[in-house]
Image (cartoon, rainbow, N blue to C red; front, side, top):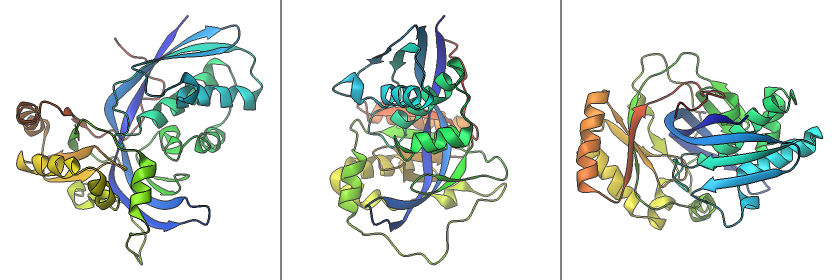
Length: 289
């Protein structure tokens, strides 16, 4: 019997680049939340073998997709002989800084860990996920968090925080590698580490992203999206991850809906979403439709 699961997007309200390791990986500090934009993963058990069908395709070959790579990695590590047919329906834009591929891969690990009765613990899954991408530990951690290191250090928020967002994808994605190459070591030296927001604190005060400048050099449309969000009443706006999506914070859902209507009318080529920040991953939630 097949099962269907939801893979949420993420947004970075803060992203600081605080160093670079000898192996070239950048060290980050980032305040991250889940966002209610979902890919849908459908899994059908098979006696053996792993298959993936992705709609629409986001890689040239299925073998390059993080979902199939995650399934094969788990099967190899756990010595699993059973298989699965994986069907991925994409709603999170590719190359958007919303973590769609990482979310899909993390959900694959979570779902197959349970369906195959592998019984790896969360910390073991995080170590496995880090081999596939820096955002996987966050999606496997299941809580809004301050993320540090190369993505492996998670500090969950002490209290849930709320915020209403409008997320704008300006129609074209950016490759993370290109943005970090364009960064070229241009990040500020900060004496103090990033702290944690307090209960009731205005999250608009936390909007910051050190990757904005290099991303703008590659795609000036990010600046257009940023200005457009402020122009329709956002209390603040920030690029998510390495771009190209820009996130605007609004006072409430009513103002967010009005902003979406205006943005859709003025920018028909953009993909625009509204929703509340999520503090928890909808862990293995089944899609209702």
